[in-house]
Length: 320
Image 1: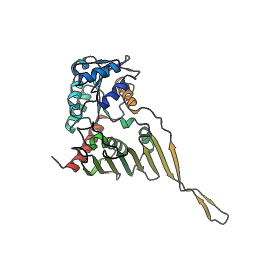
Image 2: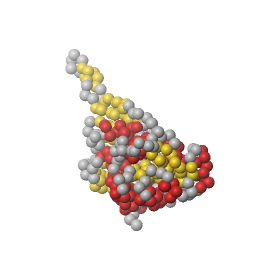
Image 3: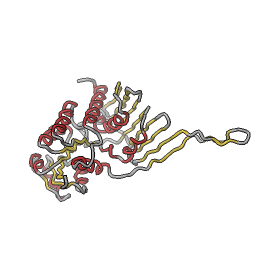
Image 4: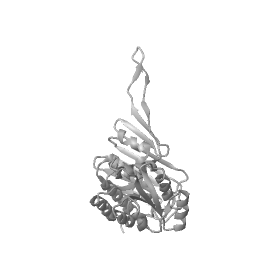
């Protein structure tokens, strides 16, 4: 595809507005227009970004090659299925859908129509996470903390699908082993869904992951720690920074053989190319459409992430 990809954005709420802003900056894509159920808001945002507010999803789809779906979660499957059926590439915000069955249907539909279906796990494009895969080869223990103050705009899902799903996605793609056991607890603090959750995942290869998330905190912390046989990795998502701790055995001795100095460990600051992860996510989506890049994560991986997320929710809330 030599020409620019014609892009549309569906949903212009808090996250949707970020998508619109980023879509306008792409060199290989053109923002054709946007749609929102609230036409007045869509019109205001369209005027701000010098684009067009479409009155219906159908009319927007007719004019585009690909769409970004930033609508509420319960609409993801319906809109994505409609777009894929009409041979449009899709970038859909996480979670991909409300059920694993819906996710499988979308992945199958994309494969059948030879289309790109990308899920908006924006942390995959965090500079530190991109470097992480190069140094975390054999994790033994993974510990994540993702806590933040409550945001009243998120009303349709709890902390597992809102926040922890990023860490589930990262951990599964790092460990690359079957999840053998899921243990989880959580509780509702400020909403009708779980607002805090603590999870332990045990993998077939022996790796253990401890994931903790809260959206009822007074601080904002997003970190990931990985213990390996010969190293310890600390990642800060917010600052896009990685520290690599290695054991060192070098010693300095006196003439008598007495040890005067032992270097306990070496700490390396890994160079990270820092960029806007959402913009990188869009750029990757466009490159995949144009055939210039392979999808970073295949659709089956997105299904696995959602399956683990729902096992966690079953543990917390009980099977319905």
